[in-house]
Length: 179
Image 1: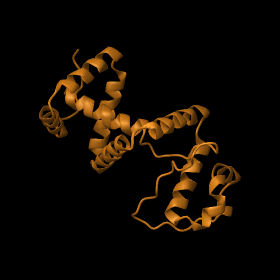
Image 2: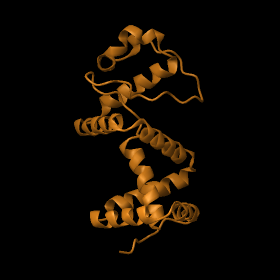
Image 3: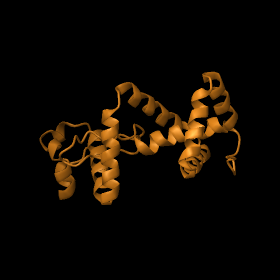
Image 4: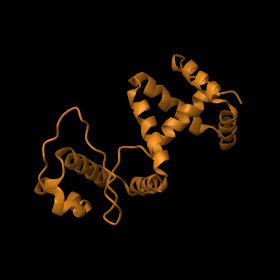
């Protein structure tokens, strides 16, 4: 159970902390935060003039090269800028902080988080829900208990971690975490 909680926590920590649907940073920061659109359906080019004035202001660094961007990149930037506009100031501050943390990470660590995000996204919806619920329970634990669980996880061998992760896949989420 410790392993499952830690896996859930690390997966969702990565997801909620760094791998959320990216949004463009304010004009002062790099707007490369928008992710490409899904490859399932080809995106249609989006005209610069179709963007709202607020979106144009956020994406002003792209104005001169907008027409040369791939359509999926235009769509992703437009969607991200719209999401940014709809955020509260607190949500924006959190997004800026996570983006700064993301940019400060070594590229290897960012790659690991991208892989974890893909693993999470490949899970069936019910399993994703279990992971989110486990992470929520983990976050509600007292900090001392979370530290204990992390320490126990670190002391496990890779084989023990793998076995615990495999064992929890089919099991329902625990109702109570004993102290």
